[in-house]
Length: 452
Picture 1 (spheres, rainbow, N blue to C red):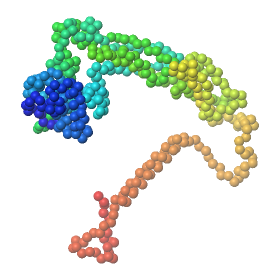
Picture 2 (picture 1 turned 45 degrees about the vertical axis):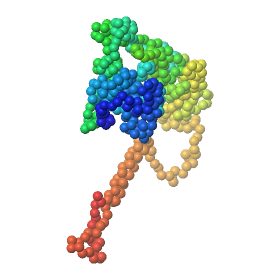
Picture 3 (picture 1 turned 45 degrees about the horizontal axis):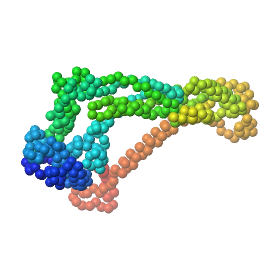
Picture 4 (picture 1 turned 90 degrees about the vertical axis):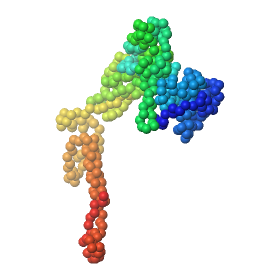
């Protein structure tokens, strides 16, 4: 949003003087002069906004061969007539820069050469088209063994009948509504002497910058220059690929007449596995043992991701403790591009203890004779000097959370009490007659005043 419309007539050398170039200046000389002056006067660099506005207007006209020709012959008045009225000169220099340099970014080919930064626009002048992102769900077994999956999608391709020209004769003319830019700029007065500029897709050419007569339009693509095609891609998932890894099909995205097609990027998304968890090249799993297995030894058969049967067993006399972990080398995931190198398989053991009442007193006494003693024997303790206690079941996490809530509540109440105390102070009450109270009776006349 910038100030007043500049609709004054001027000679046909004013814009050259603003840029400091001669009337015979080449395009490169114009660009170099504009770059130097605009960097000096850019508002973000502490320059003069009005000067920057004039520079942008001058460059916008002189860098366009058609506008420059009109200006050289007829001056500013000729430009206004050609642009359709008095609003043509009301503009935002920043919007013009954005339209020059790719929708908001100062690209390397622009006069600024990236000096002021900014994010890239979605449309480049002659750049590659947009990439198409597709996710592909794969199982952990498929990432372990490798697989080939088919991915079906639709994409735009250049019309084979008109070869992407949109017309039977191949002739099209520049849209007069937007002067071939694909975008139209309209001006709206928002306050006295203040204009707002808005940019939108040209309704005549629908953003293409070209128009084709109805009788000349291609019958197959209806003048759109592209048609839709169903395409099936074969996605090769190699052994050891990771969740989130990208597989790129270069140049397989939508085709467009004036730019090479973008890429189709397939992102692998691993489905959750009921038994194994993957971390890089390692596999993790949990296995529950009975108390008997933990004490006396265990063995079980594990079906791996490639269907192999692995015999997992403990060493003779080994006792497994709760939450103990073991590892097996070379039974993890294969490494990507080095499938013969594999990570580890980690097994975390949980021990399941018997339910209450399962062991009879006789069985407990039998276990005491078998298991090694832990601590002093009970018959050596002086029980007469001990106080008997009662154990009860408890969920320690729930207990701690409950106590934490109580502490927070008490702290909150304490803060409220402190605030109430601080909110009161004592002040002397003046006598209506203006006389002071006696010192001896002053305390009785103190009142609590609520501090606002």
